[in-house]
Structure formats: structure tokens, C-alpha cells
Image 1 (cartoon, rainbow, N blue to C red):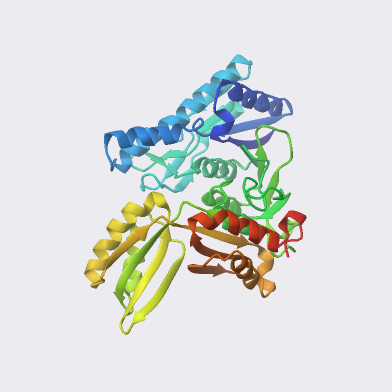
Image 2 (cartoon, helix red, strand yellow):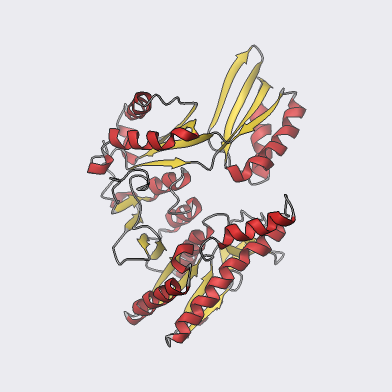
Length: 409
């Protein structure tokens, strides 16, 4: 029997009516002859509500206890979905991440999956049940509950698809698929029928919230075909697959992304000598803090300012860590703010088409938007700009590359 994995986001299970619709979709797929492992997120804004509750108790809740708290959101969803299927006469069983075999490292709130033990899942599937697994969570080697970070249910689903050998991993969300830009900002943004793993990874990392970056990494490593679709329609959506199979690969730029979950950290008057950057960024890495855009500006002989960005969620922890290192290095101090945002272009065709970055910079210049920091790779260009200029920036860049027309060049 054919096997697929489906993942349903929080908006897809936000209330009883939507849960029933998800149950009906699963039941129809099962009638087509598929065995189904379903991964479910917490309902609606439940995760945000749980975070708020924690911060009513303390400004700095322990990460282990946050994982214990946040994991309850997904457990509510899987139990309710199992009940909805049972009412329809469809045999189903709800499982926590640990019961579903998700084994992680020990980094609380940002754990990474180390292994998937499939014995329990295979047993339930072979018993002709729909296995409903709580997304976003797992268990570490000391049997503590861990969570995988924002969007972690995507990674749960792809990891299960890889471990079970599923023919596809369907990610159901509240949009029809992956667009050339956020359609809430750019009305003529175009739905992509296909996108490569590399392009999707960059877009996800740069602010396109449709997939968690780690999920795309796992898919690429194991060759898992992803289909991003809306849970509110039966439209085909976007396929994420190998680059050589992608019909979009001849397009220079496939999309414009933006990210407002950005904080800028500046380490002032750092000694300009070897090893400084290593001391700063290795200290952040040890605490699982991801650093994105990095720049260095020479102020005077012997000293420099180091500028980098982190997520706003990590701002307080990053500043605390960097202040210790800055003191050890003899730097003048540390400043941080959330007045910036990041806008980026992505496309595998950029590597063989000179002048793409210049066109992006020209689009920003025409809107009189100042670029603070630039970061590039073979398939992306990112700029830090003032946060209140993001929407104008995205629209201008999207128009420059005619992405609404499908030209991308």
C-alpha cells in the first residue's frame, strides 16, 4: 500500500469546523488506497498564548520548562483530530513526538532531530490506522521533551517522510503554495508551480514563512518530494524538488522575500586582530543562536565595529553573550535595536547572470531606500534596511524583475 505524510498547520485545525474538514480530507485520501501519517501543529495562536502565560510568571522562563509547556499545544491538536476521525469511523491513533519516534539533541527550544525510530509508527500503519503525530516536538537522550523551534512541525513531517520512505510529504497551510513575494504586500505575486530545494531553502531562511528552513534541508538530504498546498482548497500548490527537475531553474530571480523578525547587534570598537570574530560567533553558536548578516566597518587604526543580525527572539540572549565576550576583548560596548528588516532576492539563475544585484540596488535607490548591510551568495542577495521601508522595497524589487509576469529576469 502507498504511504504519504501530511502536515497540517495551526490555521488548518484552528476550530472544530476546520478539524472536521481536515479529517474529511484524510478520510478521502485513505479511501484512495493510501496509508497516512499526519503531523499536526498547535491550534491557531495557541503557541503564542502559551508563551504569554509563561512570561506572566517570569521574564526568563527556563528553556526546559518552556519545552514542557509548548509541547502541550500539539498534543491537544492530535487528540482532537483522532477523535474527529474516530467519529467518522476511520481508525486513528494520536501520538506525541516521543511516541512517534522523534529523537533529538539536547538544545531546548531549538532542538534538531538526530533520529526517527519508526517501529511504533509502522506498527500502527500496518494495523490500518491513521497515525497522527504531534509536530514540533521530540525527546532527547535523557528523556526530556524538546521542541524544534518555530515551524518545527514542517521538519517533523519531512523527517517522518524520509524515515518511512513516503512517496510525498504534503504540507497543508493557509496559502496556495510558494509565491514570488508575499501576496499581502504584492497583489500580483505569482504562485510558483515548482521550486528547487536550494531556492526554497534560501527563501525559507530569508523570511518566506511557508516552510521551516530545516525541513527543506532534510528534504534535500533525503530526496523527499514536498508539495505545499492550501488546506482550504484542492488546488495543486507548489512542488519542491531536485533542481534538475525544476521548470523554474532558467529564471534568474524566482522570488523576493522579507523578514521583519530581525534585530541588529553592533559591537563597538573591537580590536582589529585575528581571532576576534571567532570568539564572538563561536560563543553565540554554543548557545544555538543563529547569526545571519555580518559586516565589519573600520573606524580608525586598530579598531572596528562588528555588525550582525539575529532574530528578535534571540536578541536578549545574544546581547548578554556578546557583552561578556566584548568585555574580554576590550571592546567599547554593545548596542542592539529592532529598527531594521531584511529584504532579499533568490534565484539559481543569478550565478550566471551578472548585474542582478545592481538591479536590486537600483530598485531600492529609486525608492530612496538606504542599504545598511549587504550579504550575498550564489543564489541570493540580502540587504538590511529600515523596518518601515520594507513594503515599498519588496514591491519595487518585484516590479524590477517582472516577477508578476513570470519573467524573473
